Length: 446
Image (cartoon, rainbow, N blue to C red; front, top):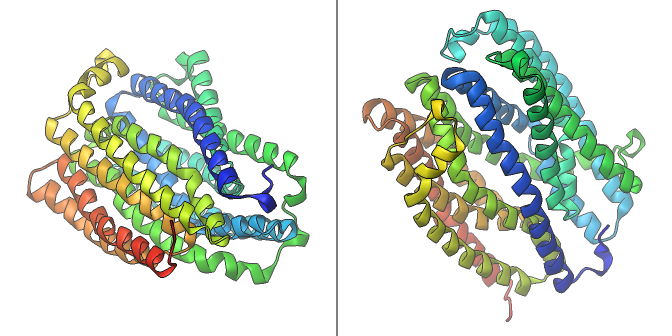
């Protein structure tokens, strides 16, 4: 466990480097497994069923946002209590956050569970490849696994607050490992049966969350959540900041995840597969940069609590230089994306994406990474108003613009990507401006 009471700039930087190195190792394993999952599930299901599978995974992202920002609110508040070596306060925040999420999860289980039979799932998925009973069974499985992982997923926010960001990769590693193991060992049982594949994925997801949660609280028994440490007064503390994060999360949902549903409805399940496979290839850049920047959110919170503005400014400068390296990497990808896809995917499922889609995704990655530099900094400081404003504007623009570009401008998949780019570019301008004003107002000194 880190000694937050004696933390300084050198120890903070050393820990960040350690988390980055460890994250690259763990995330490398996770990426390898996730790419193998794509290959094996695409081979088992074919492009149409795989498109449905992708939409199901998107639904996990949608429902995970119903935590109303509790996870991010806890992350900032917990970082502050740890910085001040207040373990009792930390336990109170953790206990309160778990009880809030458990209550929300119970409500979600009742609401969504009772509505599954009322929804026309063949229309939702725009496909009759499965029966209505199969769709309902899949949604039941997903609902129960999401509810459990919804609460247990709070462990990620806790690990981030403890500045042990690398360990958050363990969940995806365990999930994918169990998932792949069952798919390989019982190949004939799962072949072309998406319901069975959904079941084993749900089991893998819940088990992975349980393993990491048990591991952490075994090592940190002094902050184990308890009903006796629940505090009504702390609900407001967590939700006041969490509410702003929730608005941002909903807006991000409308920008990042609704794209799959728009493609599904306007272009069909096969195009969902094409889009997501190419998107996953380019996500290597955002994942790699995310590994580097993830430890900095809570580090910025802790540094701000100590008024270490010089260190914060230096970190921003280094991230901007690293951003230029990413741009160079994307230029190289323009020449090698097709051989990579051919090696990665099964021969019978070969995909040849149009070059204009590759260009569009390159711009999307550039804008996303630039935004992440400043959003992570401002999130760590709790300065979220500008993100709330720009994300709402972007979200309101994204869906109608995407539909217009796909349906009426005949841009197809490219239209969806350019719509996301346009929605994100607003913060690309104002995020750095707000950051500059923060440092100017705090009179940092070299």
